[in-house]
Image (cartoon, one colour):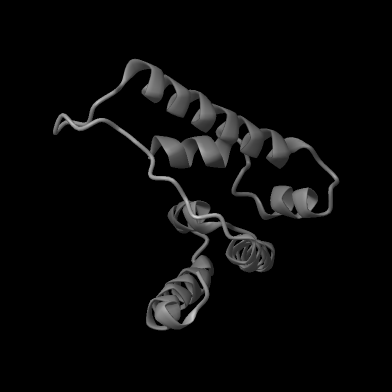
Length: 127
């Protein structure tokens, strides 16, 4: 709930702010995204320095990713198009539902359908 409140108060779930971002008219969303990336990098660095453990006593580690230009470009383009068309990325979709924007249910249903179709086609897609 706290995350939702922060995103609503910072206007990160506002369609107008997202529209401004995609038209390069405002720094607002880039500042929010940039600060989130910075915080993610900072926390991962701290986790590695402190050798933080899970509740089960295992060291927190990120497995190495396979490098593939095609899949990251295709995924990024699909994600960006969906974000631009819907006016919301996956996290804020549920926050918008909580604010009473019930038309977002169409977007949530489409996202779930897309995830299901990906699961069916995953073995046939290049990874």
